[in-house]
Length: 330
Image (cartoon, rainbow, N blue to C red):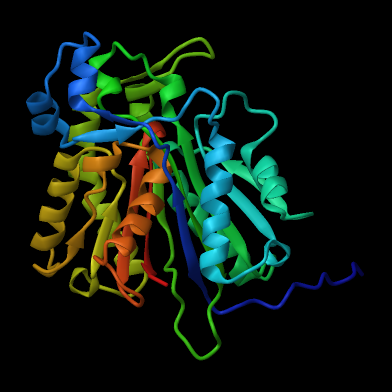
């Protein structure tokens, strides 16, 4: 008879313990883009995507540099030492090369030794996939504390003369520390609602290592305003919640018009009028997998959200991949 394998004792649930973020210091306004010869104006950009400015990294400022800073801040916010982290997950699609991964380098520089370390490439949905993975790892008993980081340097992959992309994409990193929920409290991270629309894979692409990112903006827009609100509602249903329970809606910061359309559909489904809606896109641009944790950290710093608020996160982008979950803010 085969020996019976032992499983680690499961944990009832996970929660977010701390937040951190990093943006490059260099700010590029809409007027700056127009001044370098791109056929656009401040008014045109604001009207179509809602962006006023974005942060771009220096040439010598890397994805890993930003991930390290955001991750270290999240650790400090959680009150944990690097030695207490069992896994580091970095969601990114903009590393200059696939090997070595960002997570291993980030863990080493933060001082996390011997931990699980791997990257997740689900583009703009990557952070939500990472958060779901971290929660599952903790609930299964394979980790106690997980550092999840979304970090992107999209400026390395954007043609500065392409109006369809250079006005949108930006750089930055956001991070959370995930740990076990206390035995006497409810889980703070709900089940993930995720999927993909592979038939639309060609709408956002980088053709090869010598290419810039290209997207079919109108097609992605139509898909997002139709398909993402139902994903958000499914995440709520999986967590046993309704739209009326949501205090904060944090969609991926892709385009202010998409965000407004998702919020409108959520309110039509019962969300409250006082539901706070993230609009970090206005000052940060589209930072892909970094956008959701970056927005959360900024909103907390601005006093727009508080500890215990129920936030609904939903990421979507190239792939086309999407994922969402309900979380309780630390």
